[in-house]
Image 1: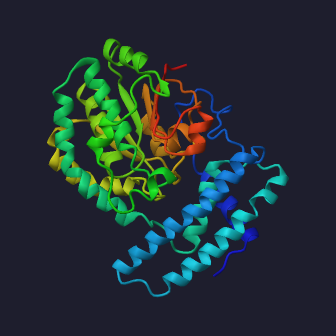
Image 2 (image 1 turned 90 degrees about the horizontal axis):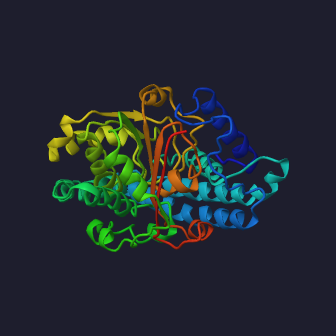
Length: 373
């Protein structure tokens, strides 16, 4: 069934409203009333509007390519190409109409575009086009996890913490939502160790590592950390997991927060649960740690913390550290978000416009640490 731009707009706005009605603001926000998830208002930012609408239309071809390949592998290709053609037609018609829709005064951000894209894809039956790619990268990166952990264990003090943070940066390069990396990793995934060696030297684009180091190594151990994870593969297994392990072995309880619904190559809570047995089997030290795995209730590569699951809020109530990892969650959204507890945002920049707006360049890294308000 085809979906007109007008019908698509009504459908997506209805879905967004229903989701927000059943969810609440993240309990660790310093001021939920003044919180803005994504500050790029495309209704008034013409350069960004043209850039992002063009990007989303180009990126759709990658999504549909992966969806068709997945269907072929499963012997389910009958009718899929027709669905892909209809999806593309509806997608372009809808996204081409966005500038005209902005005249009604609605605030439109990159996060809004994410929601509209995923709603159109799901309407045409494309729910998790990256599932095979995620599984492939998880299979490739999982055997490397013990080596990464042993390398970290061989260090101590600031040098050890630096290795942990640089591991998050190196892992975060596996991002299928950015043009600088999407086409590169459609075939072979990243070489984690090579990327880690090639990271930009300090000072980084945003560099609060020294204050982070003082707080983590000289201050009291955090009671509980909420860790918002990002992508599959090296990002999750070789970046996020070792950092959670480092914190957990110091006595910090961990809340691993993952998307409820699939989007791009992000790990969902269902992916995490499916892989968790293999993870603790290959790295048994994780069995000893208090790592609670919860759903954020969300389903976009950016994250709107004004509407998260009750499960996440219940698990986070006594947290004194929030970690947001990834360019989408920690830079395109939430870079300026303020929290009532300590907060760390870690990301590699993989988009030209994002880099330019931050007065940096592609593959610069961000380490922003703020104390609780």
